[in-house]
Image 1 (cartoon, one colour):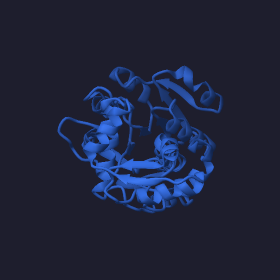
Image 2 (cartoon, helix red, strand yellow; image 1 turned 180 degrees about the vertical axis):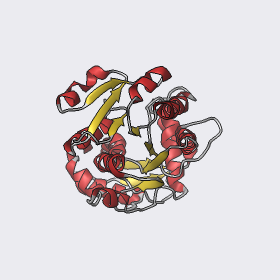
Image 3 (cartoon, helix red, strand yellow; image 1 turned 90 degrees about the horizontal axis):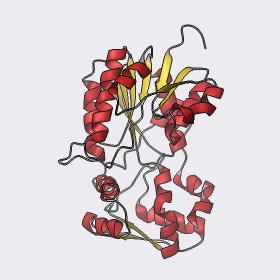
Image 4 (spheres, helix red, strand yellow; image 1 turned 90 degrees about the vertical axis):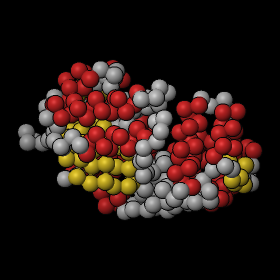
Amino acid sequence: MSASSPKLLVTGAGGQLGRRVVELLLQAGADVVAASRDPSKLADLVEQGAEARQADFDDPTSLVSAFAGVDRLLLISTDALGQPGQRIGQHRAAVAAAVAAGVKHIVYTSAPAPTPKAGGGVMDDHFWTEQAIIASGLDWTLLRHNLYAEVILMGAAQAVASGQLFTATGGLGRSYVTREDCARTDAAALLHAKGRQILDVTGPEAITQDQLAALLSEVSGRPVAHIGLTAEQLRGGLTGAGLPDFVADMLIDFDVAAAQGYHAVLTPTVEALTGRKPGTVRDFLLANKAALG
């Protein structure tokens, strides 16, 4: 790096996505600040050359201090989903702190087609965060990550064991994208993105849940069939299995969005920003075969 290199900051650097983005930025020779509520979790990143700073999204003052001297900020959406209104409050505080600290460009990890929703929720948080960023007066890049391929693994072993994959996606497709491809895209955007733009970050194909069930069958060697449900039927199954209401709501919101066609969007964003094509779901499942049971 040189004296003129912009200072880059990644929030949530102790998480899986943030940690990987920091690693990629360090490999590129960038001047990187890794921010976390608990900087002690960032010791390995500091050893690799990152600067660690404390940033508590529930303490706006800490955010202003953390963002001081930063030119470009990657705001990774927080995991505060259990209490309505908490996450959007955190995100708004981060945007305000970025403005106060003199940050020039915000990159934000959003979701496909975020929309306002009465009562709040995941997509409502993303919508209003995007609005806060757009209204900030800064330059920005909104990276609308499609559903992570890793989400498949949340229910894959159960689907293989039971032979049934339950969703409320209405038979429409999803452009699953791996966390690694998202991390590479996020790092590239933080390094190079200019101006103001909204980019969907997708995998190379939009596969239906029937196709996913067939892939699970192929990779596991055991028959799996997709069973289509209504959103309310799926809610009953998820809560009956012991999932907290806010987790069930999040999963149902994603399925409803897929049923409306919002998850089937395909874009060249990953390859355009990183120079490499995104990985396929089949290759991802093959690499994670052990997780299928």
